[in-house]
Image (cartoon, rainbow, N blue to C red; front, side, top):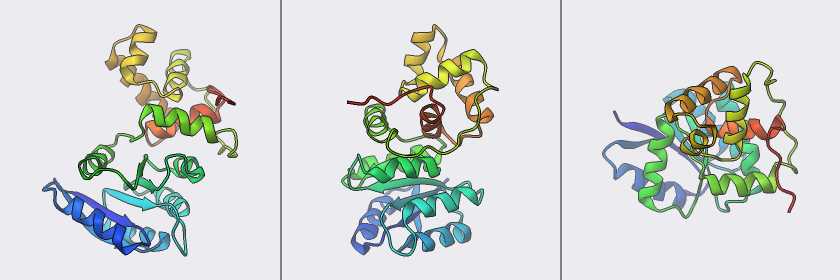
Length: 218
């Protein structure tokens, strides 16, 4: 099946470049272009794309508010935030708003295409090293969203959530807890369901907001 994409950016050159990259793949298709966040929200409602490439800084409504509106609407569309700098102070806010990951604008064409595929199939896109740097830098400077209480999690599920918050992969968690990867996946799925989280990125943010992981102060 073709993955349908909306590109939201106020710069025509950026939109055109992303369109060329995406439309060059047989399994990807740009179905709409938005010039601001409000336009992006409207297109998502009309076109129901699988993924939105969302710029952060746009007129009328920025990418963060647009992401929040899309998620609040109950849309199944996944949002990939696009930023110029990997430590943009707005990225964490966007992730808390419900984005499924973020990309840098200098991403290579093949990596962009694969990122869209990854998010479209429901996975989160955030490299572990980038997760650590970004959250360590900004988690203590940005007021956290009110997270769901984790009292309903089992002790093992809290362990798994803590390790997810440390940007550990499933294989690393399995090794540390002496579990199979299949069992870890089951625990991660249970955590997402119980805390009403969309994906693994949201679980990382929740681990910080719940105090299970604290950012380094260096």
